[in-house]
Image 1 (tube, rainbow, N blue to C red):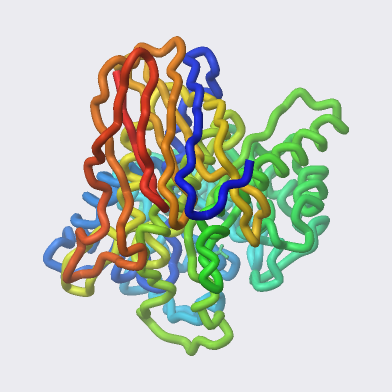
Image 2 (cartoon, rainbow, N blue to C red; image 1 turned 45 degrees about the vertical axis):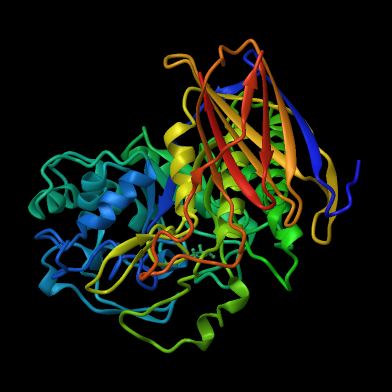
Length: 506
Ligand code: AHR
């Protein structure tokens, strides 16, 4: 059914306690810290700042990271990774070389490296997800870094870690085998066969250093890549039995005022997940393998890429503001919907990292020598991470549909839900993707003990263009909703145009 854009629409959702997807993977609430712009320097690390500890990490940023509910953080890149020599970033900080970062045309001081990041991860109580350089680097560098991080003392690199102050091995489990190696912009870009062979040999060697690592093979940089799908098929022919996850990346933006398409971005993420899962399973079937790979959606977010002039237009600089997008409620709704899509595919998406954490296309913004504050996209992420607990449920949705330029006909209303047996709490997330019509939703709750509405929160703004700023950091926040009615196992709620809603029941 296609609705005219301004008609109020009614959607029906059935939630059944028996339709379960999988437990909520806590690693879905990941983030990404790259040596890029002011993510590391001036972001997590600003020695001399009033909030910085003795090692230079800003405690206000750590607190916001924890409040955001971040569970895992990918580091150190990104495109930066593909030209990075990790040995530059260890040992006495005074002795570290200053290098050209050719990925982002920056001057890299190397004041933050592996040991500093591991200390920050501990401070923020997040799991580290490290990456090995397969652009200019190779098998040896990867194994050396793994030895440095995970082996006990008694060999060269492990002893160096001990000498540098970390007596116990870090025991890092999650490792990315390179970054976006399908992209011609990547330093050391490779064909699928070249990368597949290198990733397979690196994986084999790394497992000899530590057999317990979980390895991520590079998938496509986005669904518009000419090799999307065929890249994964070829790479997995080489690596299927040697890796655990295959990566996906996706960034979305509103183009030429086409808000309806932008608000439907999650439909692209949904088809990417379905397509790459099918591709991986097809490779597995050809190999008669009983293994099932999972996905690592380790870069996703809203990014206004059309405003970024590109790396070639940059001059080498030390610390610079790079892609510090200001987010609106529209972006917050899209972020909420993307996270709902990841949740709904929790049986196959094991890891996800919003890119990035601070300043660079990020939910957290810092002022040099000043405060740290929440961007508009902060709340939809934080509330989902906090309340999506227990098991993911599979909602049956009958939504009116509307036409979009980029994705054709899409559901106007999307939903995701989780049920936590322990607390008896049901969390329901709803998005109205219509830029200008409100929607009425009726949710039939079956086999779920939901009698009482605990919380109703809405992210919506009459002026969809407003953003937060240093002077007005709480202008766009999720706020208490009203008018939801829960009676005899039926929940009725109105969704404003372009909105994200969370309802918690028990
Ligand atoms: O997150 C910004 C950049 O986007 C990353 O460095 C790269 O992996 C991707 O293209």
